[in-house]
Length: 339
Image (cartoon, rainbow, N blue to C red; front, side, top):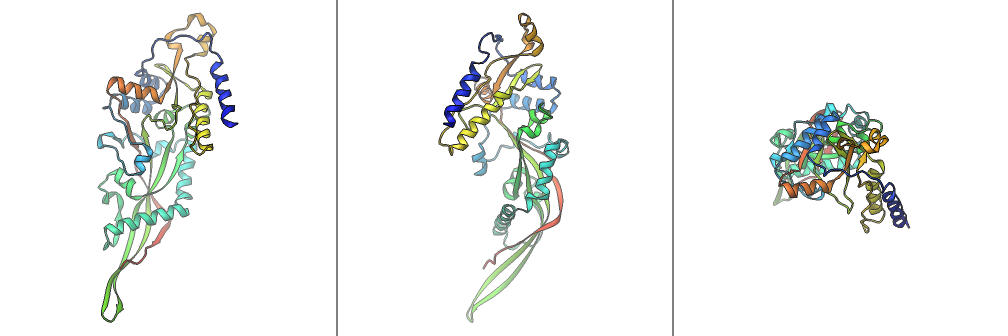
């Protein structure tokens, strides 16, 4: 019933306004960075130009990343995005504060902290003293993330808007995650012998860890991959800027809801808005429509196709700077005895 209803809505929306749509000249994807500049999206422009100018590269999927896949060194941006800029957006700042004040102390967080410390001690069984994780990882942000992150708080596209309007954050990152990772931990390791019998002795260690500081940072992949049959809607663009068609943006959400509702058993293509839009002013005098008045729908698949044709277009990973936070309430972990 749910799927049939959505199909009917889709057919109705696609039929609406089908006649008298203006015909545009073929859209040049390279107009997108110029459109971002026209909107004042300086960081969005930087990232778009980097993607178009970069060597052809398809980044790992989220599943592959969780399995340990990493980006090449030349496909990492650590310089452009600052925490101070991100938390200038009210909704984003609230998610940042929620992570620091509450989420890092959840049961799941403590469990992951324990796993991280246990793995570290398995590789460094006699370690004691102060561990500075970034130094231990040789300032490799991907290695720090892989070994020591323990909690996240997701930021949605809606969190990046100002009212109903996209911002430079929408254009550059869109949805992304704040992460918490262990920064400084004091480890005390007791080393002792345990007498099993008069003739048998085993060597044992037992460690206690106190996490006093954490890193907070943002992470996002600048890539154009679709998990569903529907290709993600990225707005209507031309070199003068961007128009967001709400029903087109919402259709992708509906498709994902169908997939989630059916336990991924049904993967449908649910798209609308795949037509050109005309600016409000030009619509008043439809006979005088100019190229600058026409906005073209752009989806993930358009970037993928552009890469195939031009042999450029490099997915890359974005990390913000690391913000070190001293915990008012340190996290205490007692590890199991190892003999």
